Image (cartoon, rainbow, N blue to C red; front, side):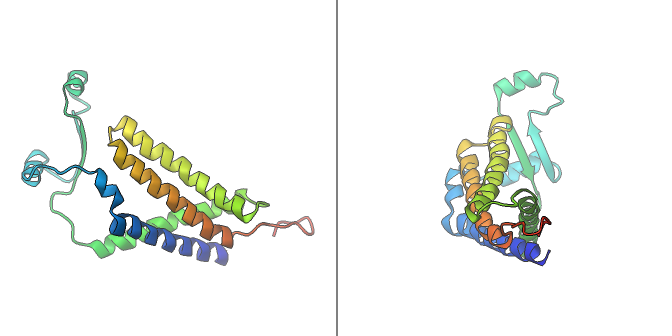
Length: 183
């Protein structure tokens, strides 16, 4: 269990730094964002009375099909008063990543009992690709998220999964059966 916790912690640390490099230093995903009008912050606060997620057109609108055909269509997550607790967000983000790595470590330990290091890395990467494929491309299809933004997010998750796989595979070694019992 100690190896599992240590491995998942180190994998989460590697994933955290990968996020810093990808989003913070490279800025690659931000190349897919468009510039809003200068009046957007004021307009958003006027249009959306409280923090939350809004879908336009409203799913309960009488002529939703016509409104969707006419446009605009938007899924808006708004936090009206801004945000200043970046340290708390970083801690929460790291803990989220550690939870993800810990789940992958448990899965890897259960499934990959006799595979090579490369096989274990490949397994973790495939799990990450599968999840990213479902989430990122699903959001583009069902919620009209921009494909460029989703592809950049997909790339982040796939490379992150590969990095996590490299670390976890070192801590979840191949099991060898010597006396018929699991090691």
